[in-house]
Length: 298
Image 1: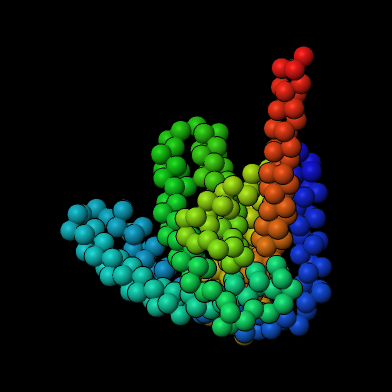
Image 2: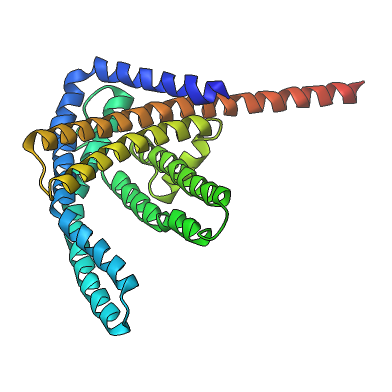
């Protein structure tokens, strides 16, 4: 258990740092031209929509406590209009960020797996694009599950509510580790969509705890960054300094690149373990067959 929780994740992280150190210029290029612009778009969206998100939350809270139904309906309509505007803004940013995120993922994964830059013409962009879209819709479908569990246990004892929160959050982190492997599979192997996710699900066997810890680590780091940005926006009335914005953008871009490298190293380790297990199984069957033949001869 100690091996899964501590030693295996530390080994994966150390190997990832060695790969980045060996190919510093390549990963700096990927950082500057893919993940930094992606991080800029992400923080621009968060900053530009902060006031609108706060207004939607405020209107929803007011609508629940007003005394008359007419007032509540009016406030709900106003909140819905703001929510639609927020959704359209996010959809526009998603269209802009999807190509960048795809190029960042494919470039970083290929560099970590092969130690060289990917050829734009020789790369198959269709498989990763299909897999990334599939992962996006899969995560969107799973996103309400933790909230549903929390709402279902609202009047229950504290330990049940805590258990439901742990199950929901833990399941989400585990799903992130599986789909991360699926994206790497779509880049390194001839698979796409559900098939890539299914292969990732099979590869994580024997390393579930290690994958869960690594995925949870990046969720924790990105969550801390988001909370810091939200706190600054709350304190400064939706305005954030240039230095703070630059610092968080660079930090988030580094986390994205490092997460791709770590996931690729974890994939290589899982693939090696999976192939070794497949080699051992036929040998075991051959030994059993030899024993059966010897027994029949006797």
